[in-house]
Length: 331
Image (cartoon, helix red, strand yellow):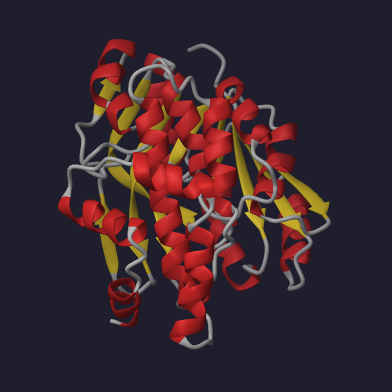
């Protein structure tokens, strides 16, 4: 047997102290042992820094970064910059993975050396579990097969189909992943995973989809509160500019896909505005002002969908018909 491949696992950590032990235990107990675990304490205010240091004293494969709070993108950058593995995994600090997670990835990486490897995930609150497998065929995709099956959904198809944009439940060749992660500005708070994954998918020449669900994505009360966020109006602008810079948008139909993705981000921001504790008419007025911006008007005008649901959403935004969105939000 040749030398074992080293894998780097980056774990951004903030406010997940009560879940962190389960996460790190699942990593240090991997059946495949040649890994480094990079715990990035992003200025956590709970007991996470002490937990990180404890594991570093327990297992020499654990590296710890203590840094000032800078957000998820900043934390992932810090971990990625010191990663020394051939491939990089991202695991969120309140999630965990199967004990054979890395071993399953290694089995296909050793054979195919693809740019990207993905698996399904299990959504859980530790009482109930829901399996999420890929809707496209598992197995190896060379460049020709990627152009046929992956590129058309890499960002967003005209039927609203997207390749799962999460950084977790995936492994990336480090030289493919690092420049994309480092290019994302720290200010991006919506779609920060997709800002990395989507450019990678449009540039990757090989990919492997495992037919197993190996990643446990935790849904908890803290996660639920994210649904009450009010997203920044500049978020879709950041994403649009970023994707235009990082993707050869004249290739395939990527320009159209980027426009659809941005339009969907605008809809998400509009929807989130109704989380404000303000009167409907006041929220409506502010939304209309934002939708009048020339760049957003252009995106919404150029956006083309075939699916009825997304066509309806775009129609409502173009014509500033916000009451149906408000009522859907309340339901």
